[in-house]
Length: 202
Image (cartoon, rainbow, N blue to C red; front, side, top):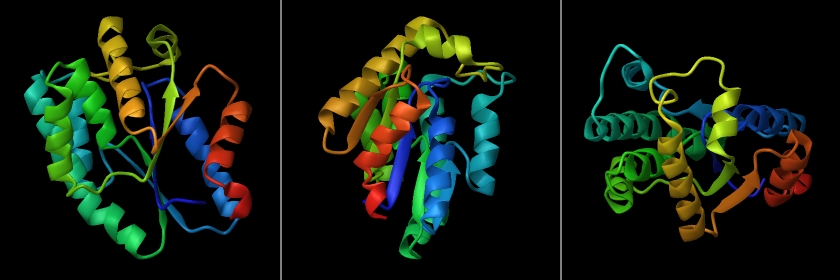
């Protein structure tokens, strides 16, 4: 494994959880110590913020949404991510600060650069070393969702913008991103991820 902090990104329904589970099994076989976290969430405070963000009970304006995500993320990075990596664990995260750039920066129209800088401050520039982006047509990903949360219930036009945001990130940070077609089989995609991470050498 050639990194200590790996993020899986993509629209809900793109298959992040499946690939994370596959990777977890391989790391366990290789006796690599790892921790899986999710965003928003991962700490007591962050899980409370998650409930606010994803609940259908609240209307959250875009700026408040971006600030809540960054607050949750700040707590997670300082309380869990950094200490875990410093203790020799590999951290695998289901979403990261890059999500906010795509969702709130581009999707909500708050500005790619604005939201990037907000999150850079929140996490003290502690970004994932590598990112696996599962790219998918939003109409297909939305059809896969069983129960959509507040954000997942938005319109296809919103998710098309989010997808554009992700692809812009992958272009701007091409040294960090692996973009894979989420419509390919999980076997094909895990092979790509495995090779990219040099798992065979672990």
